[in-house]
Amino acid sequence: DRATWKLVDESGAAVADAYWKTVIPNWSRDVEDLKVAVPRLMAVGRPRAAFLVAHFDLKDLSARLVYDLLLAMTKSPEPSGTYMLQQHHLRDAFEVLNNSAQMSTEEMAGLEFAYIDIFDHGDGKPSNLSRAISMHPEMLVQAIAFAFKRDDDGVDPSELLLDNEEVRSNRATASYKLLQAIELVPTKPDGVLEASTLIAWVEQARASIASLARQDIGDQMIGKVFSTAPAAEDGVWPTLAVRDALEQVANEHIERGLHVALRNARGVHWRGEGGAQERELAAKYRGWADAMEYTHPRVAGILRGVEKSYLSEAEWEDNDAKIARRMRY
Image: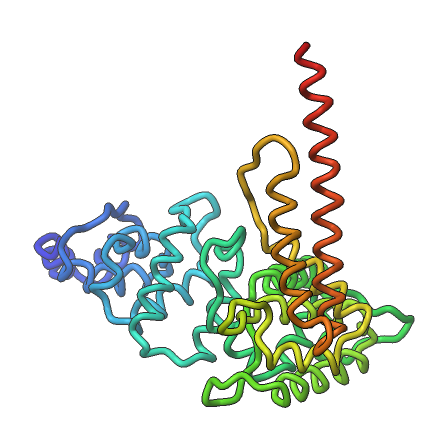
């Protein structure tokens, strides 16, 4: 506490330096202590130790200090296996920063990419990354280029190349996780969703993806982008602007990416015996497809594809349930 630190400082700079480099800190309940301890531990290269001290009371620190602490932890020289970070505490830190509204979208997007692992399995979303990519499609293109190899024998531009294989592999893994975690539908600066904005965003992204020889997988990632669109006011998915855009830009690979993303959106689920759940989902997609059969036939076809996949799965679950019942006797 501050009484101890006063004595340490009075003993001279060498003693103070040795103290902060070696002290084993515990979580503190005193906010004023935190405001001293966190910067002092960070100053001697111990940001993870500082996070341990403060992780229950991050909201009592300034947003800039919390941001600097998270950023410092990405470059921490502390030995591996010490002061391990818990993902839910890191997500709490991001919540503090987002609620503060003091950091720019660009700052937060960079931080979210550095901590992309904490957004796995549906636990929170990298909202700032999604917002940044919505405004700048070239960021999506870059992530695709990092995560996937070219589909020809060409060579990527120098800015995409790395000599260090480990760094290149880590960047590819992080970029792939980013592509799985983002939820965005490009809008106008005022937040309005309109077909022309979506079409322009897709066309810009596709042109850049094609120049890097990753067209097919790039289209599939664009299809995933459409999967997070909202429903219309009448409950039919997707909203009208997205239907209009899809009718114009959809192709085989965009449709495949959308289909896979819609199926994956079901996530982890409890199931009973047989395929009743799958038939219920199939009925939902069939209803949406029926609602746009004549106005947006291409989108209706995508939805019917999802419907058929659930009906096929329902039949498999029914057969599996019959076999299980026979095995009991």
